[in-house]
Image 1 (cartoon, rainbow, N blue to C red):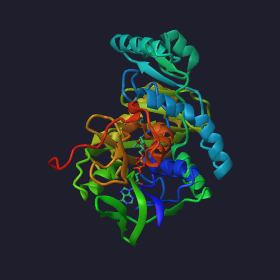
Image 2: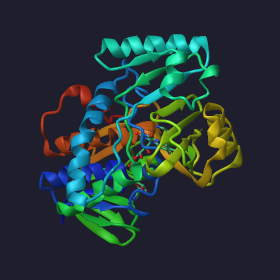
Image 3: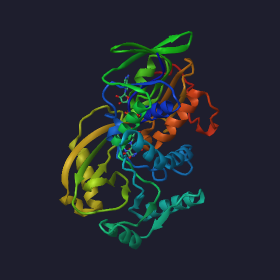
Image 4: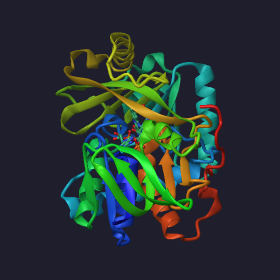
Length: 371
Ligand code: FAD
Ligand code: GLY
């Protein structure tokens, strides 16, 4: 009998497991594949609290708090698991290709500065000075966000899982949760491909697959997959310091001369294949940004499925009809960034701690909508 079962061994499930284990809950993570093989293993690892989340978004405060949690988390995970999550504070540069984009990014810089963030508009000349390998002549300038760092997403997920285990959690891989067990509208456990397992609480953190699972409880969760294709290369030279972000293509410099280039966006697709049209468009755009990338050595390509929701906000809350059944899903493009705050917030919910209402992003309230 567990205190909490977590369905899904991605970054969200493992972050919740880590936070609950720190608070002495006996936790089991159940994963149908292996830990971190889905979206969380596919991610580029950018912590785009400013780049990806607008200052006026309801997610903005959460995103910034989560980004601030990374430095102490990286140390804690290192000491518990021995895994270095490769946290780097080298900023994200968002490029403006036209004067219109430049105008919008200058306004974004003003908004970010007004809300206390460090954000700097770079002219074409300043951009060239900062990142000499960028093809800056075709750019109208860029927005530089120095605190939007990055991590190794795969290692973050692994480190959270290993640290949770170190603190007493169990992990069950290659096991699919097929249904929930309830008694008098209260969760009692789950039915899996290898038998039933009992718990006082259950959290569904199944990423893009959460909708199918929650259908069993008549809850119409509007989470859907957005397929993303990425590839990675090696180059002997130091081509850039910051992550470079432009519509349709980003380049993230990793350790050891590795670069991740992403990512396509194909809604409603759970297809796992990498298609040449997606790769072709990414390669063309990446070389357009940094021409020296044409001499990079190929490593590999992959896909992942971002869990998106209709209004773009993740679900974090309790099931409206089943006490003790929780949901944490729908983090779309920012699940790596939002993993620390989601883990801590979900642990607060489950503990029954008073939680600031601005964090209750989207309560689960709709039932039996046409699926
Ligand atoms: P997943 O990682 O998909 O984990 C869900 C897990 O649940 C899966 O392992 C699945 O097998 C398991 N599962 C589902 N149903 C069941 C069941 N019934 N029984 C047992 N197990 C089950 N975010 C950022 O912050 N920064 C980035 O730079 C970034 N880049 C990205 C690039 C790409 C190409 C993609 C695809 C995503 C990117 N993201 C990024 C988004 C981020 O990866 C996701 O938001 C995040 O990984 C979602 O985590 P998750 O744990 O909810 O989902
Ligand atoms: N956040 C980057 C991506 O989802 O591709």
